[in-house]
Length: 209
Image (cartoon, rainbow, N blue to C red):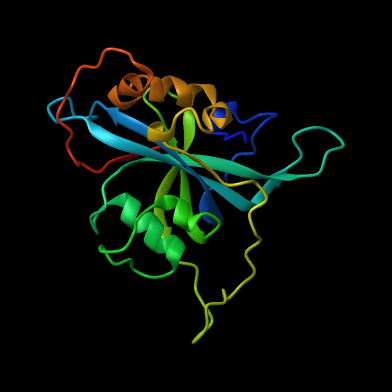
């Protein structure tokens, strides 16, 4: 499965841009990125996950004559399970209700579930425009039921999970830049027999796209 994550300025022939505003999306992938330096160099490294969503109503034909396909985008979150974490907020929105901390917060258990993602367009430090996920919210249900108040199409892409612990399972399904990022982590190096420099891991929550 191809997971497309690119700045808006690069979304030409291969990936339709996501317009600003709220959009229905379904969780289709979770990738274990391992441990990486904190954005704040004074803080300890953090464990990260990449969650990928299919924007079921943003569609484009990638090649002339081919049917339209939904846009796909991902977000990187710190693997923290507290109620204030972005991982918790995303999975709660997917689930349609607040999650109990004593229950599993495995993203794969939420594959195919829908939520609303509010998208904005921002400018990176190198001057490129990119999509930014501003917030995550539940899709309203009909009173007394589990049915959505409006139609949300099912995901068209297959679900995919990659865990360094189970490497190389699904390794070939990852985009090259994800493989490069994972290969920098001490977990990957340990798994593949490379020398590892150990570091303390801090559960500091942060999100980037």
